Image 1 (tube, one colour):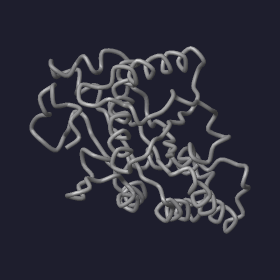
Image 2 (tube, rainbow, N blue to C red):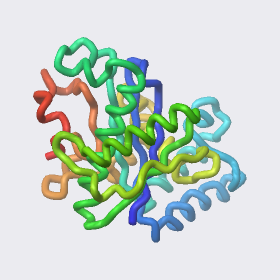
Image 3 (cartoon, rainbow, N blue to C red):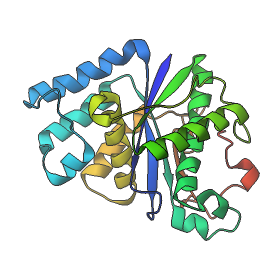
Image 4 (cartoon, helix red, strand yellow):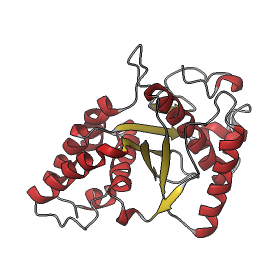
Amino acid sequence: MYLLFLDESGKPGDRSFALGGVAIRAERWHLLRDEVHAAFEKHGWPLDKEAKWHGIQTGEVPPALADELFSALRAAPITCFVVILRPLAGRQIEELARFFSDDETTYATALMFIAERYQRFLADQDSYGTIVLDSRQREVDDRMRRFFERLQEEGTPFTKLERIVDSLLLGPSHFSLGLQAADLVVASTLAGRFHLGDASRWSKQLLPRFHSHPSTGVVEGVGLKEFPARSHGEDPPPEKLFDLR
């Protein structure tokens, strides 16, 4: 059984928005915990205190600890997934605009991309999994539960999500080391995509931990997706949007 901890960076109405996180086999959870706690202890950081991207940006988290945390994530047995959406660009493309019609739809689009990639990963591992998502507002949480329940029942245009069991689990991030790890992965990936500096260095450091195509080793489009893509002249036609391979 796998756990996929998800977090977001930015807002669905921003120029760019990211959703993603880290998957880990339940019985190996302690290895992630041990790596992160070792980094905390080395730098005198309380084990019960969050060390998140916002703290790195404001300087609350010392640079040496930040470096140690990304090294810990690189060493841990995690698999990373991140979807980067460009809502403003998407709304300018007629056949893609429906995926970005409002903030809730944009968020649902990101979750759908993630769920499909997680399903493919679980199939490759011949395993099952669940999703742990950071709690926001009760009304929003309820809407996301209902959306995900429909997604489980109906699947996406290309995939049934039969390996993702039950529905979303939601909890405050300060109670979950997994959600804190997801925050670091997603925020550094989004920032590193558009800016040089530490974020770019950390995102490159984490790249080997991203899910990749089992035959080619390619990460883009599998564990890491940008939509609409900037690197090509156009995106796939709408009927191929969810095709991972």
